[in-house]
Amino acid sequence: MLESGLCKYVVLSYGHNAFSSDSMRRMLMERNPDAAVFGHFGAAAGFALAARRAMHTFRTGPETWKHIAVGQRKWANLNPVAEMYERTMSFDDYYNANWVIEPFRLLDNCLMTDGGRAVVITSAERARDLRHPPVLIMGMGQSNPSCDVHQATHLAGPTGAKKAGEMAFDMAGITRDDIDACEIYDCFTYVVEITLQDYGFFGPGEGEDWFKDGTIEPGGRMPVNTSGGQLSEAYYMGLTPLSEAAMQLMGRCGDRQLGTATSTRSPEIILCNDNGGILQTHTCIIVRRS
Amino acid sequence: MDYNKPLPNVDGDTREFWTGCKAHELRFQKCKDCGHIRWPASMICPVCYSRDTQWIIASGKGKVYTFVVYHVAYHPGFEDDLPYVVADVELEEGPRLLTNIVGCRPDEVKCDMPVEVTWERITEEFSLPKFRPIS
Image (cartoon, rainbow over all chains, first blue to last red; front, side, top):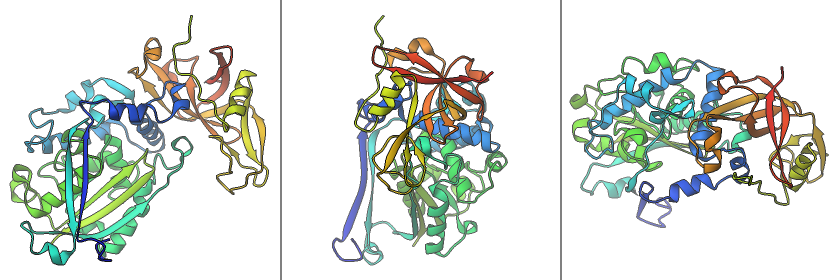
């Protein structure tokens, strides 16, 4: 739309009173009446089915996911607008959280949020005159396996992330080694693991070793979900990762700013993504500092 | 006692399946062109897009593809069942069916465990296909 001249600025926005209303709950509960017959409701259960199959297919489970929940919480503790800003999380807190839908404990689940987030997209030329330094889109990819989730063969990977990631890297003309940080759609902890795995950051079953010792935390070698993400900042669907990537590259992130403030690499290139359904649709976007 | 859980949503696609369940038969559509046996029910074969379909009766044997254990009831009708198992069972004929595993403890369920259908009659009109371990 921008390149064809149909418009000059596009606002990409998300807002929801998901916490104080029952609209999100109703949407998730009413989606599949024939599943409700067997007591199967909502999104957590669908992703838990995927996670369980992954546990059967390669080495993963709570021992891997605790690093994601705790690592992202450390970022949220640096972010004053995060819902979990003042609440720390230890590995013990993670293991002591109640089962919700096993293999997911409460702390494997994202938040329900009242609020919103938006980004403005325009041409690189127009962006030069704006108040903040622009962030440039280097590459995009999309892949939608899109089967009915109960028939899906991609629950334990490769998900749409594999093809979408390859497309985005190809368009950007870079490799994984050029990525300074990742902002990953994280409705549940397992989704962060399978997404990074399908992008090729580690092989199937190598996630626990890759995540341990604070890889994704402040001070880590590959920061992930630096606002706290949907697990610990706020749930704004794809706008949680995308807006955080833009803010980080503009240098507007205060105590959680990538670079010297958090003993991490100063970010030039950030990978972010979104997915929909139960791993049924996937979009990858690679952005860079101007 | 009145049945206090959600009832099946019968439509043009699924009527034959639920009629079969009432007779304690697992009925699925088989494509007359490519032979693919499918679920959920649909007008068109998802593999070859043919509309030419016949209904077959499945053996009722299969294995657990994946499963979860509910520790929270999202509908009051399931509160007394906690913890209960929802599984995706892969039938010998190919289709995967969302269902419950019964007849064993939740911590005894494993992926790829062999199971067979067992019928739960819930009303005059409906029976649900649930699955239990093959001993």
